[in-house]
Image (cartoon, rainbow, N blue to C red; front, side, top):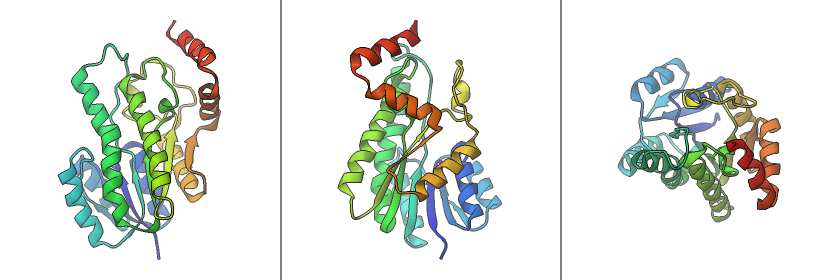
Length: 242
C-alpha cells in the first residue's frame, strides 16, 4: 500500500515541491498550511491529495486538523516545514515580530510534533525542519537562527524520548531560493532550487541517518566551524560583521 504522508507548510516553496515529489511516487498526501487557497490549488493538481488548512501556532487549529487527518487512517510520515523568517540584526528587529518568529518556528514545531505523533503508525516518521542557520550564531541570523537552534535541540530530545515508538528526523537545509530567502540582501552560497531541495529531503528521509542536511559543500563547512573552539570560531564569525 502506498505511503500516507502529512506535510505541514505545503502551500509553496520546498513544501510544495516535496508534495509533488511524494505524489510522483504514489503517496497519499495530506497537505497543510495557513494559506487555504494556494493549498487547495496544489492539492487539486496532485493525485490522491487532500488539503487541510492548519496553523501550527494555534493548538485548536491543529486539533481540528488532527481529527480530519485521523479519519483517513494512520500516517507513515509527518513532516513540518512551516516557518517565518526576517533577515537583520538581533538589536534591530521589532520585538513583536521576533515573538511571532519564535512562536511559528519553535513552538510550532513543538505543537506539530505533539499533534502528529499519535497519528503515526508504529515506527512512523516525524520530521522537523531546522536549518544550517541553527548550527551557530551568524551575523544577520537574528532570532530566526536562534529558533532553528531550538528546533535542532527539540528534534534531538524527541529522538531520544520516542525511540522505539517513532522515527524522528531532522531536516537542515542550506540556502534555498524561496519567498523567504528572497528577502536577503547578501550573496547566498550554494543556493539551491526548491525542487532540488525536495529531492534531497526525499532521499534523506528514505535513508537511516538522523539528519538530512544539504548542500554538503555548505553544511560540512558550517559543521566544521561549529566543532571549533569558541576562541577560534567566534574570531572567524566576527570577521563576517566587519
